[in-house]
Every structure is written in structure tokens, then in C-alpha cells.
Length: 294
Figure (cartoon, helix red, strand yellow):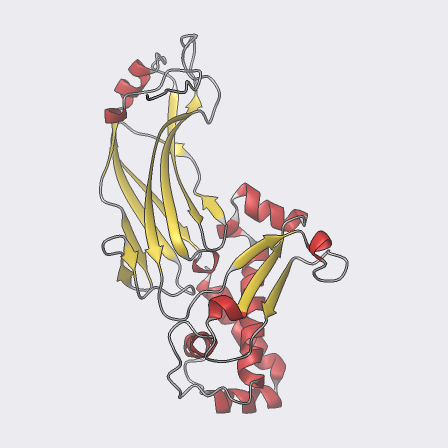
């Protein structure tokens, strides 16, 4: 026996909105059959999703006046990092529309859910008592799941209450990178984990308000994570970037990091330069990580 749960207001027929093929590009490659096998978490994900909207039909179904305003928004969430975000809500136009967003690669991984929603922006003057009236009321929604996996592995990102978990002293820290296994052949998903302090107000602003793309805190966290991994590469006596480590291993992640941020240096030269002027190497890494996130 099927059941129907009323949302408390009229909603449009599903046929009032139709979507085209979602277009996803990251690191120069295009999504194929819902998967991106060679994606790397240092590559941002560009999403475009066309849709056709029967705007008069939506207003008619919802008994909204002609001057009511209907909007649309593209949002995302990642099962690997537990992070989510969204673009700004924009006006929906009768006919063809295109929603676009850029998702920082450092915030996603695994299965990425992309969602497109039609929402009420303003009910207009004299709507029906049965019409949606609250701005943001959901009128229509559709989602697609994309699988982002590839070289370099992806370590888990875990939100936790640092105070109750006893992480980072008295719990005031923003994040903590835990490298529990220095075996270069160990899977990065088990050897490394990034903990984010869920009770820190600055972190809550990123997690809850969906401001990941423009967050300066998130950009600095990304730099700090790469800086710590760089220190592992420099300080690990057995690490050699000429070795072909297993895909997704800690060694593979370190090799990938060096090739992206220091393409003109092998690990031996990087170690020499770091011994000579450590601050210059860290400054160079900061500049390149920041540029990657623009």
C-alpha cells in the first residue's frame, strides 16, 4: 500500500521541469557513465546541468500569481568527506536554463551527489491559501550520483567534537591530520585521516552554511594538509619518487603531490632546497595551493 505525505502546499506536476544531460569536467577529463576513474582530489569539479522550465505551468499548478518569483539552485554533497555546499539561488526563466557550479576537489571524493531544485523565491501578491508561501519552499527536485575515484587515493575526512574526543588538547583546534601508518604501501584511506572540529564556530560556518567554495579557512586547511604531507615526504627515509607505489597508497599520494606542486624538482632536490631554505619551500607551496583553489 502506497502512502502520500503532504507538504502543506500545492506542488507542480513533475513534467513541468525536464533536465538535459549533466556535464562534469575535472582535471581535463569528462565524466563517463557516471564515473570519473582518473579523477584526483587536487582537481576541482566543474558542473553544468541544463534544464527546461514551464514557468507559467508551475505557477498555474501552485495557484501562484503571475508576479510570483520562482528560483533554482544547484547543490552537492560528498559521502567521503561529509561536506556539502550549494551555488546561489537564481531566478528560473521560462524555457531553457543552465545551472553551473565549481566544487573544490579538496572537499569531495567517493560518491558525489549533485542535486537541482526548483524553489519559491517570493509568493507574489494574493496567492491562493493553498499556494506555497514561504521563500525557499521546495517545488521540484532531482539528483544524480557521480563516482569520483582515481589515482592518489583519498583519505577520509571526519567531523568530530574535539573536546569530547580529546583531540588537540583542550578542543579548540580547527582540524587535525592523523597519519597513523607511515608504511608507504599502506592504503591512504587507512593510513591518513583528517579530523575537523565540528563544534568550532568557524568550521560550523563552512559545514552548515555551505560556504566551502569561498571559505578562506578551508583554503588554509587545504594548504596545511598538503604542507604536512610534504613534510612526510621530505622526512621519510624510504620515500623515493622514482618508485611506482600501489595506486591509492600513501607513497602514491606523496608522489602525486610532488608532481603537482613541485613539477621541476625530484625528492632529492626538494630535500636539499628545504634544508637550505625551508621557509621558501613552504611559501612556494602556499602560493601554488592558493592558485589551484581560485
